[in-house]
Image (cartoon, rainbow, N blue to C red):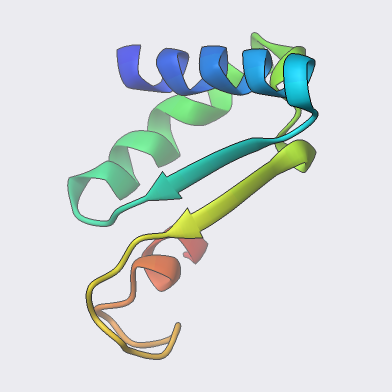
Length: 77
């Protein structure tokens, strides 16, 4: 929950000052944690505006999005 709040706080500040928030996401256990904790944190902070986010998926594997090892695929599910 603390990580999700930190992301939302940084997003709120970035959107307020520059109009956009950039976030790089890795896979692993982070996927489940953010899937669970980020939605309620975002609900509590409307200024974070996910429509203003640029999200990059950090993945050392070069696999298609539908591959089981794809970081993007893990978040998309």
